[in-house]
Length: 284
Image (cartoon, rainbow, N blue to C red; front, side, top):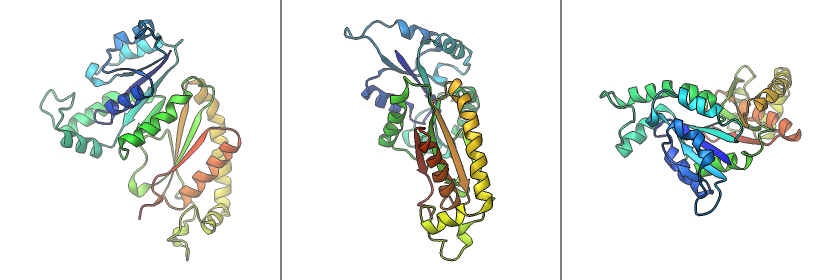
């Protein structure tokens, strides 16, 4: 049996994610109490069919203390499970609550929604740190969320390798909240200030050549590549099937794009399952 535990911020899309997983063949359970988690492995067959994949949503509706959940997880060590944490920016969560007019689960003292969101974020932080995968749904629709989940599902049975996602971004638009590692490459010479490069991006040959010919770039790529290779075995030992590395520059169009593509190509050539996202390359 494979178990997918879906958790995260209220309004981040857990209900939609559960429906997507149900469509993928999971037996879906919403708002499962932590004390019942270990009982899942003993569930009777449904319609005579053994349950091979179970997806459960567990969040603050079941309480704000997660000691019982962590104890339950210790009891699942012999069963493959993955914790997926759905997150979104505070502004997006606030907008979603405003649009749906839903009451926040922690709204028991007449607090403002902004206050309950901050409270929930603090409460969930230990669970977020325990998660195998963090998905930022701030700019995702339900179809894009489904595709994100599809990347998670096929690899549940194989945790011997770590899938790498490299994201380029611009600091002026904020850093990706689902990143495990964030690195700032604004120390590199900026093609934006070079004649003829401002309107180009990190996929244009002239920009690529400019960035990669800088001595600082060569040394940085070699050292950062070596650092990632050093820590990857530890992520694998800790059951972390996914590692998201975000590389940021000022606008997310030039330096971060080149460095992201260069690092990703190196790990892909060594056989790692690698994907690339250029979050801000099309922004003005």
